[in-house]
Image (tube, rainbow, N blue to C red):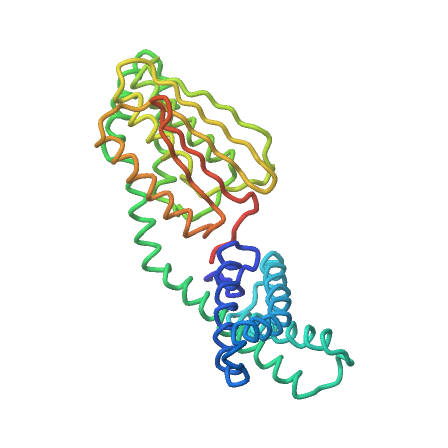
Length: 341
């Protein structure tokens, strides 16, 4: 049975708040010009326009805020209703909010009706329908074909020759240490199981860290003591979930453009900590100086940025810089789990 898609906008998402806020204010500015322009005198047009805009904003902005909070709570409640019901709820909420704000501003009982109430509720319904429909269309633009193609491309980031290198590493220790070789084969299988799975899936942070440790163990067998990874994992929420294969490709980049390219020891630092409702991931590794290598590194990071945008919209960030011949990456994602769009 197919899972019901979430059609109620996520009012807690920074991208949703920004788009709704900008859209509402642009529509409000245009509406003031269209409805009230005839009342403005040319001598005092600017002051009269500002006054009219603020007058309408005093009603529209609280309505928008109440609507976003309502949408946020409904999404966090995890409503599993049919698509028509979800749309109806999303549309009716701003209508009720507009009616409430209108009554609060002009007084009177909430159970009496007037032309102003009907107009406010009607505009709220229209605005809610437009916003919800736009966000639904935007979500559809990324699924299923477009985002699936992007995610399939992202899955290819574990290079084909990594598989053969891993097998060679296993063969090099299979006679001397069969138990270690068996453990490495299990690690390779676990990595490729993750690659072939749904990379949109959210998994426990500890699961992703275990996958990274397995990957590092395989590479240490191949590269020897030149590869050293320092893990500094702080206290995080026990139910913290992250996109599958989020951290492993970053570690792989650090190995690929560090230990594989440098003659000396490659010290990779991984630091993870929770700051309020944000999870911060910091990775630092030495880099070779050839520009082509940096360019290749950025291609993989751009893939990760695109994936974060699809899952978290504007709530995630990825910043990189080169300092003292080391490549530093800082990634931030929200602690709270995201449901599928």
